[in-house]
Image (cartoon, rainbow, N blue to C red):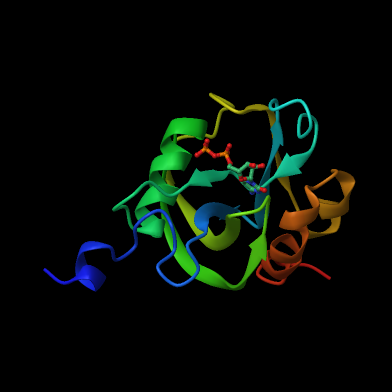
Length: 146
Ligand code: CDP
């Protein structure tokens, strides 16, 4: 196999070397799931789109399905990539997909201490991580309402 096939989708992005963090705009019944981080201390209490780091050799979409299973105890499928990429700490970038719930009701199993399903007009009732805000705004356009 060539370098490009062996490393396709691997943790560090082939173009930039940055570690890719994937997150889900999980949409269900006209609402978006927000998750409140319980750790680390500097992020605790802030709200995010659930997700995590892509592991070496893993497709980003597969990483996202795995993270939603681990963190929320649900089966989900990715739908569409929200265009864009947002820098996190040095060497990390955030990419976001919309996702659909296939089975289960999300529970805060790890990394989070509260979950909320938010309708479009409720999205600004939680304190989102700054880096998640552009993707949340874009996901809001997929929700019904004004
Ligand atoms: O679960 P895992 O350890 O793979 O990753 P994580 O700790 O949940 O996320 C890795 C980094 O991405 C952390 O610094 C998070 O704050 C950040 N992150 C974010 O900024 N926005 C998200 N929606 C998800 C993660």
